[in-house]
Length: 365
Ligand code: PMP
Image (cartoon, rainbow, N blue to C red; front, top):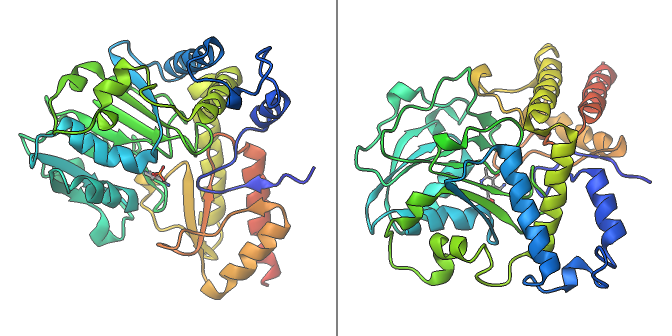
């Protein structure tokens, strides 16, 4: 076995017990005499898998009954366009709080359909902080307010230390939780809609979870094909067309693994521990390593950092890879190093990284 600690941002590490179970069940699923990847999505066997995945996700995130849970293809980016089509009238204003690269992408995807108002942006500050709630220029008649709970590239996350998301009255808050969902308890009722591509904390790439308050599904939105209509997906149990069934099944295994490990409270504890270890190693390095994000919004999931001498970055990456620490190269937008430490990354993986960082620094003399 030569599996290494994988710090990839997404597709990201999956829990090893899940991969083992999937491997054991690959040829024949539970008496179906065929692989789960080979049977109809409308077969009783798959319907059972799909229902259990939804029920388990509802348990994991304490999703209230008045919210629908959808399992859709298309990734988070597709949802960024679909939310505009489904919930805003043509040209209506929608507010965007932009705290990093993905918030900008959300604006870009929506602005073909809505008047996207950037209510606040951290861009002038290199996305090292999130503007205080008091500075948000929210529109009273917005269709929704969109924010990114955790910015995967810039390593910026809404944390309690930053403050509270302001009360938006009857305007629902829509949040991209792609890179932090299920890493701590989530008060779903605070949001009109939550969406997350699976490929960080929930499973393999190819399926996206959308959790949406049912009354919002009745909004007229804009003219759109049925396949772009969330209400139609909800009515059809996410089986309007052939769903990404194997990915749905694998995500279901991840949900069961998370529940068995102790649920989101346990992952909150582990995430806090992993983040504490890694930021302490960076901050305690006398400037050898540097993270530039304001302490109150530092991400627990994606930790970007730089070496004091940029020329050392490639040696760091090559030696880390040799030491069994994979995929630490920073995103091309920022450069440097990025460690993504989602739920499937054990605390021991972060300890191994921190030890390597100290070792690397010592070797530079
Ligand atoms: N939002 C966030 C926060 C992301 O991290 C990503 C992907 N890294 C996306 C959106 C885009 O997701 P997808 O590639 O699934 O469309």
